[in-house]
Image 1 (tube, rainbow, N blue to C red):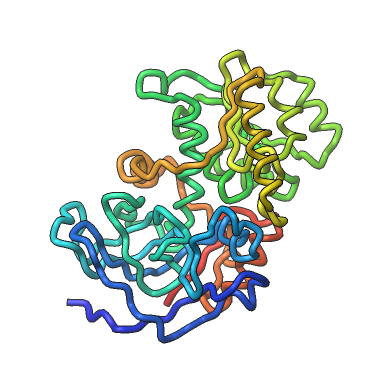
Image 2 (tube, rainbow, N blue to C red):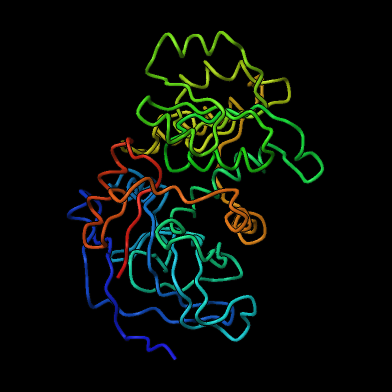
Length: 358
């Protein structure tokens, strides 16, 4: 039997503002307890950082997360070991190594701590492949769920048409979500032609994920030449946002193609304060593209947690996709979480940023 302590150490969000002041390390946080027969208690080994968590911590997205209380533990993506389970949990046993993502990164059970309670009936949770490190496993979560939603579900990929060859473009291919976008695009069908857009320094990384071709957006001549090729894309997955890419790339879609976006019509939305007027303008912009755009437009606003155990986790087990922690500089100890947030805030992070939890 694993002894579960009454208290744990973790990081709490105590206010909105600078990451160093808003995120406070605490060694005396009450350990969460199972409250439902379908829940498990996970001893967390690693957790990953997502842009949404940094944006909320900064105070830029108060309207979208009005229910956040102080102090609270935030974060969604985790990997770890089950140390206790409810009576109705049949798919997991105590001792199982698992990975996944909570339904809400700002709910009652955040992951920037030693323990978290996971609702197996709703959250993303699956057994971790043995050869996948806890750090690499934690890099999945929101990023891989977003990529799967945008490319597979919004792209209308089904079992019946999965073998159809598609041309797929991923914008922001070296980032946390884009790096999974490349892999998801190839995992559907290895014959798919997958092109990524990123900066020159990340070209080799994106190629290593399976991209057939990588475009350096900073090379104006090369990028212009790419646009002039007029490649007919079936799916464009935009992980950067903004109208610039939309206006340039949307015309490249085939008649029934789809422009999926993880961010929306504002580049890096939430990196600056979003007030009521900003939200209304954003909603209007999205609505206009959906109603009057020449191609189908979809913004990822919900995640396919139901697909994680049945469709996404098996891709890791079969080695069709892998974790996207780029190097050891992308892994931070829990006490240095503010540095991890600063790195993801720069919009220059390669792959996923992960927190190691002792």
